[in-house]
Length: 144
Image 1: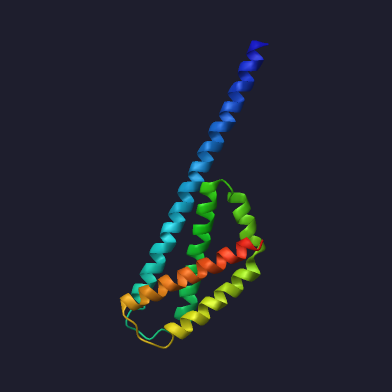
Image 2: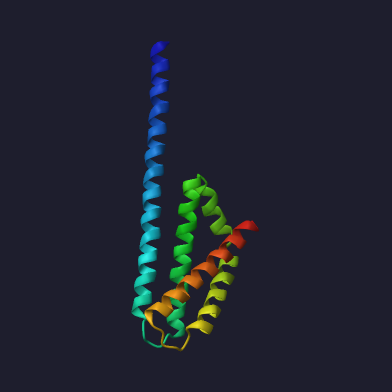
């Protein structure tokens, strides 16, 4: 009887340790993805410095911002313990996210489209776009 109890305790402990390692690995991967998205966004901003910003540049910029916001959302919810719920919310809200991306494109077309901007001006517009996108994402997820 004692042997069976010890085996059960060992199995439960092993399962707990495996889940803990998986959670830490997922957290690390999400943080790396979030940070690489931020680096990609900053690098792209530097690449379009002092050149006329075209609509394809704006499409890429909004895509990078959306990617960063999604990884930020997933990482934040993983820290709070609701990663699976966050993934479900991202899948369910795809149409609303598409509308948010279109709003970001309209914003960037009005603020930097067909213009030459310095790096500091582009960074300010990027930060405004991130703030706008973050507000829209929060609004989307609050409505779910």
